[in-house]
Image 1: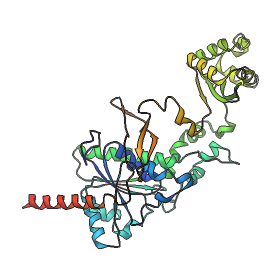
Image 2: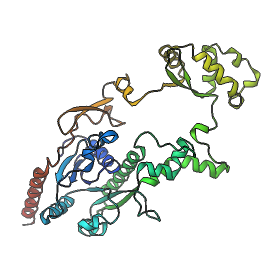
Image 3: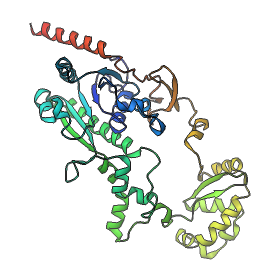
Length: 389
C-alpha cells in the first residue's frame, strides 16, 4: 500500500496490540503514511466491544489500519504470521513478557527468523524489579506521584484522559522512527525496543523530582502549590461562566492594571516586582476577582486577547466541537467507523508542509483485509522464487 505521499510511505508495520498504548503507536505511524496491518484473533481485538468511557478506544486508535484475522492454533496461520513479519519493517506488540513466546513470537525467535525487524514492545515497565508486573494508566499515575501532584497525597486524582497510554504510544513511534533512520544509514539489522508505561509517567513528573533534588523541599501538589505569578487563577464572570487568567510578564502586569482600573496596584510602591506581587496575592486576588465578576466572558475574552494576556474559558471536551479554532479548516478531520458511520476527531497535532494529517481514515472491519493480505504475500513469494531462479 504505497503512494500516500507521506514520509513513511512504503514502510510496513505489523501490529498485535490492544487497548490504547500500542494502538496509539500504530495509529500515529499509519497517519504518517505507513501501512499498518493489525493482526487480530478470530474474536477480534477485545477493545472493539468496550462501552462507556472505552467506547471511543477502538475507532480512535485504530484508524487507517488494515485488519487481518489469524488463529495461532492453526499451523497455516502461524506460518502466515511469519511470512507477514518477513515482509514487514516493524512489529508492534503490547503483551506481557512470556505470552508471545507461547505463540513462537518471542524476541529471541523473532531475532533469529527476522533479523531485519524492528520490534517495539509496549510494556508496563522497562527492565528491572517491576518488569513482571501488569500496569494500567491509573496504576502508574499512582506509583509515579502524578496522581498526588494532580490532586493531593490524601486525595490523589488521575489525569482526566489516557494521557500516559497515549504518550507511551508516542514514545514508541519516536523510537521506531529513530530505528528506521538508523537502518536508512546502512544498518541492516533491526532493533529491539521496549517502551514502559511507568517510565513514561516518571518522565512526566521529572520536573518535580529534580525540584526536590535541587532544593530539598517536597514539591507541593497543584491544588497546594506555591504560585510563580501574581495572577494565575480561575475567576467567575458576570454571566455565570468561569475563566482562567495568567498574568505572567512585567508588561502584562502593567497593561492588566491599566485596562481593568487597578491603578491602586500600579501605584503601590510595595508592588514593584513579581516577588512583591506574589507575596501580596492575598489582597490582589480578591480585588481582581471583584473586577472580573463585573465582566461578561465574551467581552472579557476580547479584551484579554487584545492585551495578549493568556486566558481560557473552563471548557469540557464536548465544548471543543463548537470552538472556532478547533473548527478551522483541517482542525477536525472526518474518519469512518467500521460500520461506515462518520465521526470527527482532532487532526494529528502537526502541520506537514502547511497541511493537516488524518483526513478520511477508515476503522477496519474485523478481518476485512485477511484475504487480500494473503494474496499479496503469495504474490511476493512467487516473485521471490522467480527472481531466485
